[in-house]
Length: 148
Image 1 (cartoon, rainbow, N blue to C red):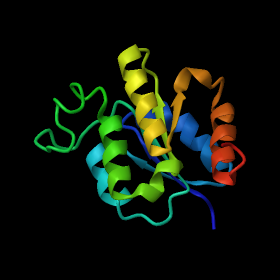
Image 2: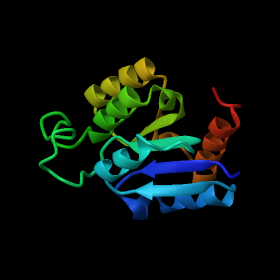
Image 3: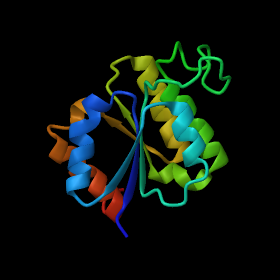
């Protein structure tokens, strides 16, 4: 069975090269554009090899309390709330989660780092990857268990 990677990021045009690289490596990639849609699927999924979550995510409904404006710092940290809630309901998913960010805000990076450490997830910064191939190698390492 091919590894399944769930990719939660509203900016599908920007993540296309990363997703294409993972597909070239033989992974099934399932994209989600909103936190709400992804959450509904991922709390019940049984086939996730890796879950990649962008820190800044779109929400499907602004009336939803789970990802409220106040809880997500005006939606700039929706991915943090998403990861926290997902692992609260499915603790087995923590080590399979990668929080991906492009932020340079020290406060957000600190919150993300502490949350990932607490939940057993990984925090990856987008600028640390030199190419989609570099990103693909890192994800492949997580899937294979060779990257701790």
